[in-house]
Image (cartoon, rainbow, N blue to C red; front, side, top):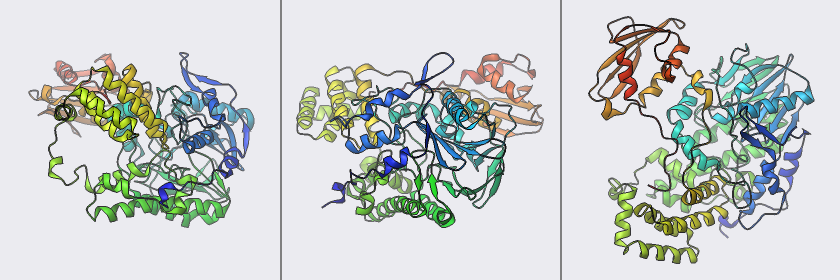
Length: 602
């Protein structure tokens, strides 16, 4: 029998026992709302998951979603608590001598604040004495301002490179990632058996205000130790694993190990469907081996920033070992097959997991998948080009679609053929044909509705939560059109360094509009005691530290005034010499990102 047909034991309730263990209290109220009244998080939205699996959901994904729907304050071990089910991620609270260390404060300030309030209601009004970010994804730092204020004097701990990669993902490519992230998390789907049932890693992302404060303590090496509020933390630096900047930590006094997002109860992503840097499965596997060697024997519980803990030294060692083998196997087998001449798409159809991994619930593809992870590993080593010269210079989607439809005898013939494949159960090829139909004739409602039906059926059969959400979001948009992205980066801009602000301006320069402009601005920051020179030439905005020198415009300002200038306050209160119209020229060549760009239509 093929291992693709193997499924874990449906009678095994161990995960449910672990997910329920240590419950202190459920949420204090059914919903979390923002100051303006809009809904940020609805605890009752998952109530339908208490029922039996319907025919519109994969039974394995339904089971995973039931586990992720548990919400409340949980005790992990003595002095270690978690808020689970308050957002896509978990917030961990580690009690110290004077207060509590907060680890990974969720996506939204509102959810983080509500979670902290529930903790304090049951554990006392302890102050937050430190904040720790395990890695550079927004669901692990976005709610920071819900647990501390911008002027609070507490250490903020993060792995080396945290700010660089947080900004690269959430600011530089933030608009595109947030737009695709709506598909990824199913943010616009109605919760229920036909719509949103979860993302595999959690239910979905909250819709509150996300912000960021700069770290003050950097973890730069494995073995580094820090005492936070009297608690000893031993760190393992794990760059290029689940995030380009990430760490695990061990609490030797509590015999507890936090694996951040490097070992969770599913197969994770080597490349997310929302977009990201391709992760290194080889390094990921080796970091899990290192974590086992460093910490497993001295741990009684392993927990993470998603899902539920695993207790017992033997059990957690087995869990980590199988997670390690999962990423190592996918990496090594992809390389074996690509060196035999197979392309990424071909390898994704060929690879099967070993029976032991195929039988492990925590190795199922609820968030990542074997299929798209294999393609990502291929991409990391071989790039986008599959080696066939016909792939070098293909027409873009609309031009290709028009030609394919013409070759197949016109739109009516394509729709008829697509319907025949759909009726025969070949949903994959029906979707390929109908993609061409909708791009060749974007106003034809027949093509869009047939493709929506195809996507809906694909979504209802998907075990991977992110696949389901992508399919169902596409069906929704084909029927109702694009809505603006409901998630924003909020107050993240306030945490950017001056260099990162200039970088974010550079990627907005409209090259053709800027070709004929040549200008230089000198920026003297009195609060930083630093000066920068920016120059615009050949459509490129270049910035560098500089001494005084000639410039078309010289500005004397503070770092907060820079943000005010760029958000419409102009030169009010800023000393300047030279030609102020230079700034107007610079701003005139900056494009605004489009948070509602089309995905399933041209």
